[in-house]
Length: 353
Ligand code: G3I
Image (cartoon, rainbow, N blue to C red; front, side):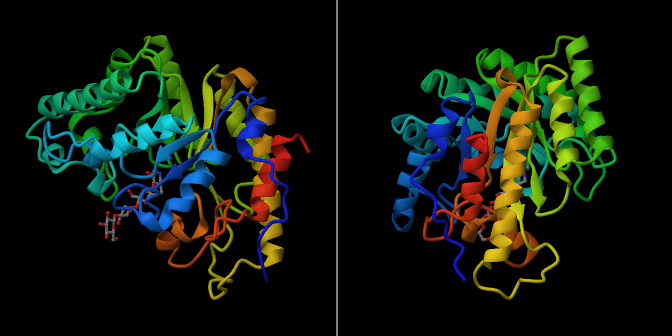
């Protein structure tokens, strides 16, 4: 059965124009299967530029991509992406200045002999990268994930291995506030976000993030918003939980982004042998996307909407296939770049339907 949508030619960006926030998409660059600059993927470029307001680099603006060796900054691929975005009237959200995740951390940082050395490496990393884009592309990189995934699901700071943070181990939580201060000093206009997963359902984890936000505000540490990665499934978490979590951040007066949205349809592997998304599941996914976008519109006041970004363009290149070991069909577009029912669900929610 086909999961193609019969939707009209309405575009996401035509709808967000009146809603006051950008609708974005994570795109691939060199090294990624969905590299939009690969000749085979050229058709992705017109879909991205005609549908979306903003792009995020799925990988090529992470730590080890931009500074693989100490002070050996490699901006070429990221500059090409930002130039392309600027030419096509798309904004850019920077992802991500600090992330503990294994191979994203440059070896020279992992090998830093002591805390002060590591802190100065982080300061230099953030200062150089943020000012590079602010200087060369003024107003183009409108926001940054300053720190990504610093908390465990139990609300403690990510510390011990496995999946630990070398940054916390060497610096304690101070590396987080230092990162925000350095980013703000390098670009006073870009919005600065803390970004994490599972905070749309784990009250414990969300409360830890909110406590950090309160502490930052009390001590005048700059932070503009919180990004909810929102890697969710068809049924979990329930929509009221999502809405309440978004509202809790909005109640702090912060900007709220849905930063990496995707909706996995097959987390127990029950339809893993299917080669296309069946129409029943596609319809459930359409409703789910609709409900999440509506929850965002309901829970976040216009002035606090940092936007919604989906984590990839077409299903076939979603990170979830490798992560789950089978297809999840989690995105808005089929591999042939036709829209899915999920796309219509988003459109309808943006239309207030
Ligand atoms: O670049 C190499 C390539 O040379 C090699 O041939 C290929 C073979 O596996 O691997 C390529 O690297 C992959 C890289 O993506 C680039 O495509 C890595 O193996 C792969 O692990 C990496 O996955 C990325 C993952 O972050 C880890 O960095 C995903 O594409 C990306 O979607 C995912 O995004 C993260 C967010 O940054 C943070 N939140 C969670 C989200 C999903 O994990």
